[in-house]
Length: 300
Image 1 (cartoon, rainbow, N blue to C red):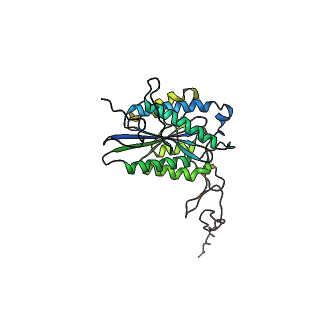
Image 2 (image 1 turned 90 degrees about the vertical axis):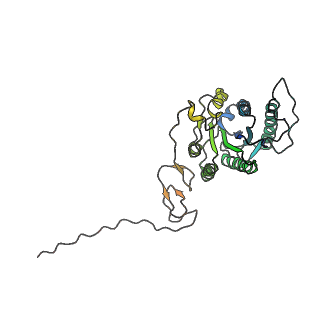
Image 3 (image 1 turned 180 degrees about the vertical axis):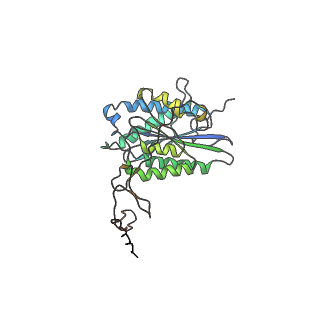
């Protein structure tokens, strides 16, 4: 008899003491993204590709768990499993009930989330906050898992937004928190290069990929991000690119190559300031170097 999970079962419940893989997908739905401003219908294609990828993750193993989040410029929200009562799903055209449940729940909650949000005027989304929510969710699941059950957790960020230096500190906090919790962060960039998120992938031993062609999004998701981290070294994946480890200054929130660092709180500034705006430490203004006078030789 096959091990079939009922459609109305809580997706976060665990079975016996088996190895379980938890995948949290963060989908950036900010309409201020350039690719969505130029062609709003791309969001439907991205959602369908992500849902197919999520179902493929559940299809790999009956114990695999899934959670999905929608991210906007002002808020983030779980769209699967969601806070509402699970939908009563019956088999449609021979499709597995869990796959139908994921598709219907994600699309219904995503429509409510987009309708409740105002039109964004910026292409920057609160991805750092969404990753923090995902880490809290993963930590809660880890605490409630039964003894002897091994949980492998990872986060996949699918976004077309630009890089936001204003979230630099928040990014660094969630990256090192994920590293401490042994949570892998993967990033799928749809439009432009994201140096800060690339740093997070490198810190947590995740994968970063800028999709060359958006039409093949599902193929790239299945090829690169579907295999779990322990299996990836045995596969032929895209070669890693050089990581841009530039830091963002605290004064203008711009990435810099050379700057000044506060010796007390380690804040970074692009120009010298006598007072640190973070910890208010006062520093001495560097003056010109004193020139030592040469000693005159005494003639005997």
